Image (cartoon, rainbow, N blue to C red; front, side, top):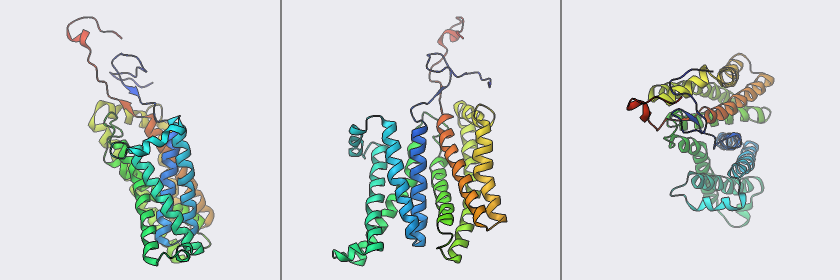
Length: 305
């Protein structure tokens, strides 16, 4: 166990760092699902690739609400959170997901079955509906990182690069999944573009993760402690070998050296594994900064251990 002048003290009142335990694995799955689904929808919308849009909406529209409500614990009352967009990140996120899913489904029904035209909605209206889905998806991609960055109690999260990491990871996942899903149906030109885009995004992901660690380490003792947990402590093996090596470096090398479908598939799976592990560890490694002072020691009395 790593030594520190302010050790971890669990839930006691002793001076020291305390882990946050409210956002757990179910919340990590909710974040991961929303970002992967929204990223795939956005990439597929840009390519005008209907199957990718459908899969993206299914991922974000099912797994995100299910695991978020499971985390909140009282699903039958959770709808009340949607009514407070002025003060609740949950509300803003729920409205963004609803906008993406609602507009996305209508847009896809028009694209697939011509439903909009059948009920008298012109092309301009359906185009606006499609862009409504895009706006909702963009909010979904970034709002979770913004919610984390708004949490000043955790230096690891209170970082301008955390929302950027959400967006970069979402678009990376979306690009790689589009490469896999559309391997036989997307044009060769678009496949080549997706491959290049994925390589660039993976490089950006590496830089953003490095930036998060540097900024957190230099901002406060709590941030430095969180970074130590990720690089040298309890979570070092998972962070180094799953998040960085398997999740970023392996897919980068595979995309650069091979165009075979199996290589692309493995690159997508390894990237998604690393992304999910990042989502879990960024929650687990966050610690509260100590907010009490050693009053006994400051007046010459024996310090308690």
